[in-house]
Image (cartoon, rainbow, N blue to C red; front, side):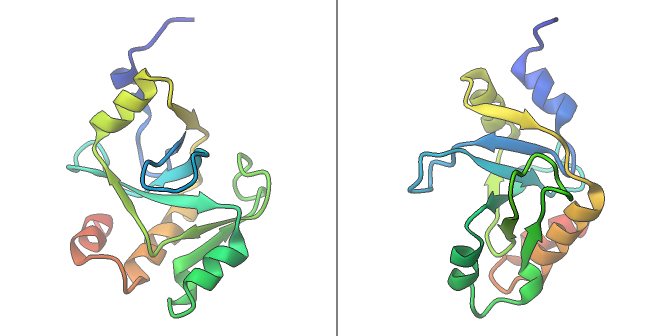
Length: 145
């Protein structure tokens, strides 16, 4: 197998629905999480917009009692086989990362590439972010294309 430079690997794989598994520095948990790319054209945009998956469904719901229901998207292992249990994605929080940071994490062995998520699921996540009263307008505009 040919070793592909991390920059090439990221730029070759990043698209709407790309899923990366890494530790988020702003979390209290040191466990890695699944992050889903929402940009319609992530290589063209200044930053990559992600949402984060959690297996703690009830905890996430309790944290968001006043948010529209479509901003909390539950995905089953049938819908995305990488998830081993029902998983919730809170579309009221997004993460912005430059592509360079993903390359750096991959170079350091701190990021794993996962199977791409189906576009119909990604559309639901994008709709959830756009429906959220907590997300800034420029992010919503970016995701609307």
